[in-house]
Image: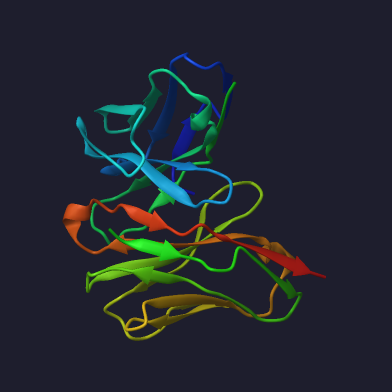
Length: 113
Length: 117
């Protein structure tokens, strides 16, 4: 299995509070991604990173920010959590090259009350 | 933007039988990759099989095979000799082959597969 972990694995928070999810990899892969998965839907891309300090928006980026100060860590922050951000969040990593396999973390279940 | 459609929210199959999951996609690109992922109740995303668009030959991985019809933009997954452990949600995904795409993938909404003993 690819060395990718997510923390926390479960979190319950209240509306309006800030939340930070962490993705950590030991593979030294260039690309890192944050997706969310909601019931009845596949994974939707929130943000991604193509290198240290290099990030860009995905299709559902509103209300989220990211940071990558080290190759191994990619942080997803909800500045002021809302109930619509209740979801399962997946981190993924990939080496360089579009043909490379994307590896997924175990997911973080976030509940915003 | 690319879209991926899985028209079967749920499918069921008898153990040891064969089942086919459908996926269609929309793209204007000529070079891309297609994937099937399995997500069991543990939620872990597991790559089942992938297909390069420039390859005419359909990919196979043991009991899993695809029927890739590029002109029709269709990419179905066939599971042969279904096993109880195949029960999961299956996602079809598209990825552009262009490096500027940074490996972003577009996923379908998934098909829940039930395997009956």
